[in-house]
Image (cartoon, rainbow over all chains, first blue to last red; front, top):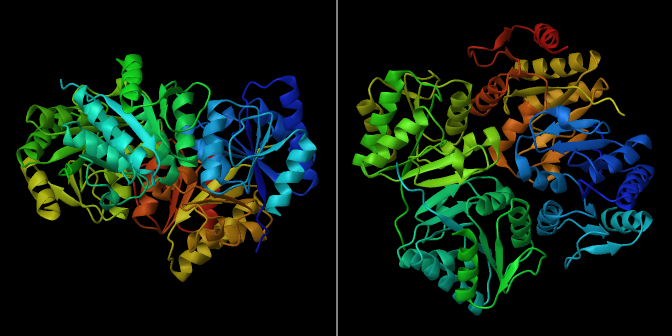
Length: 152
Length: 152
Length: 152
Length: 152
């Protein structure tokens, strides 16, 4: 038997502010430091920054892509899952994690928050949507600590 | 050539209040009266009531099911599309319409609103979520009129 | 209650021979004559010809598209379901029918035959793949008669 | 940057013969020995045996599940991707690999072979379907050598 990698979904803006990008990187670093891997949508912005932070700190990174070419993935995904499913891959990103941390983000992130809440996955927002049922954090440390308290 | 049926997505609560159910039925009636068909998730509550209103007024009704058995459909869907895709069918429901009217609803409906906004589909809420980018209506007449003004 | 439209999936070559195209058209005509609707992948070739035959004979036609724009549909689909799911829509095409008739076709059609057989849907081939579990026909009349004998 | 894990899809019987199971295990071992990871459908039979062989030899194993619970996965998957997509996950299994090795298998495996060929992925059969466009092998060593010759 192998120990299955435990993953947190990091979702959010494809075109983030500098602060969101730095928050995403730190969330990735902190997840890796706590022994968690990361799953994201595999593209740029928050996805790239969070994957980079996690990978650089030795965490496993998974990118689930909307298109069918693995070449679309950002360079920080160890495991790349192309899907060709377009937006429907959003559901897979949140289903693959034990919970989701949202950093910024627009309507696509909102669809992911909806799917995560529907599945009963805990969701923590960091400068993202304020939706009933989500938890809110102000710093990457809060976000990761709040999430891991719920899933560990 | 045949004229393609024009459809509006009606999304919302599977377990609605009496008012939501009546609103859904009226939305269905009004869509049919204006020459539009309806697409929904094919199950109960708002989906059933809206499909009933539309079908009883002569409109075409399409139900896109999460499961793989067409027997799960409510009895008011003329065209039943089982998918076996689970929650991922939410995306298909909003993609099949020219716009979406949301009546009540929880996290599943939220995922549909997110997907619809992401695709640039107009979304009108009727006692549902208040999300930036949505239009809000207070009565079925407003909801349908607001929607059709945007898509016709 | 409305009577749910009964559908047969017609699958096959996007770039058919003249004979395959004519076979597809006739299959569509015969399905409509027997009171059945048709569901297909919504694009060209066999899909277009079969939908045309069915629609011109008064049958209901449904096209389930791989892309997210309903403008990709051939002009003979009364109900158009864009999915954005790429090849994954192949599964939906065969799931939506009570059985599938395959006319010519390559690897995409093969994936549909596999999905149909896995779901226990009857599959009739007309100049298409020869796969264990499929029925074979030589003319459109045989194909439709063989199919409807199994699903009616 | 991290080096993306290179994966081969191993597909086939959920209820294999003893020989198929042993072939699957050996294919997993050989892939790991050559520096490749493995992606499979995450369940039992060929999927379990191949993942076991690969994981026990130090290779990365990915299981893409049809259901939405990661508890359905066999115990040899390091990365578990639940999808809730039912049969549509078959497409994802073959899309995630650089090529697919089929060991035994029925209609579900046939759908995967169709999808793989449609995407231009090389497919090697080992006691599985004989489909035009597939390569055939008689032993695990042949299967892996034939595959890696095409994808390396």
